[in-house]
Amino acid sequence: MSVTLRPMARADLPDVARVEIALFGEDAWSADMLASELAGEPSGRYYLVAEENGLLTGYAGLLAPGGGQADVLTLAVVEERWGEGIGAALLEGLLAEAGRRGCTEVFLEVRVDNDRAQRLYRRHGFADSGLRRGYYQPAGVDALVMRRVLDPAGEGWQRPAGGAG
Image 1 (cartoon, helix red, strand yellow):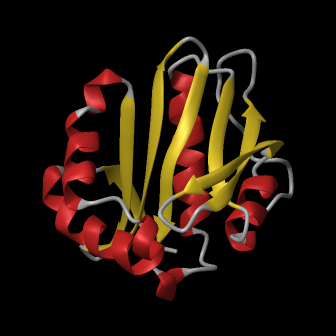
Image 2 (tube, helix red, strand yellow):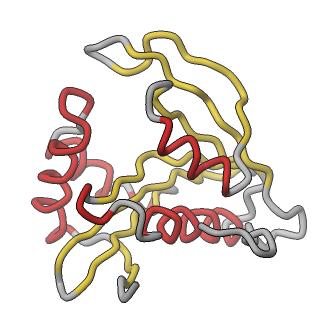
């Protein structure tokens, strides 16, 4: 995989919005929402993109405002690139950033019908923590809440020995 990760820039937003709509349909964040999120980055938000040869292959976002907890806000990989480790790389980038920011726990919500994403998160140490009924609107799909405890030494998350991402 020759994909590189870098901080998301405003110039990435049109490509991010296209991927968002293609993958999430009616659950997609609007272009205005994405721009607002990126503009809020100094207030604890952190967004990454994965790219190869100048083409966006995925993106992810984290909210870590302080207090020891962080939330994965979004994680997406273009469908043609699923199974190549891009999602794992993005998630590892978010977990490392959460560790750098002193977080000891990371939470996320994932659609209950998104088995592929749930497997990725479980491979990276996330466990089921709760359920949010009707979380994804307008369809009213439930969200599974997942939680990952980070290294208490503040060094972030380390991939399990022999674990694939």
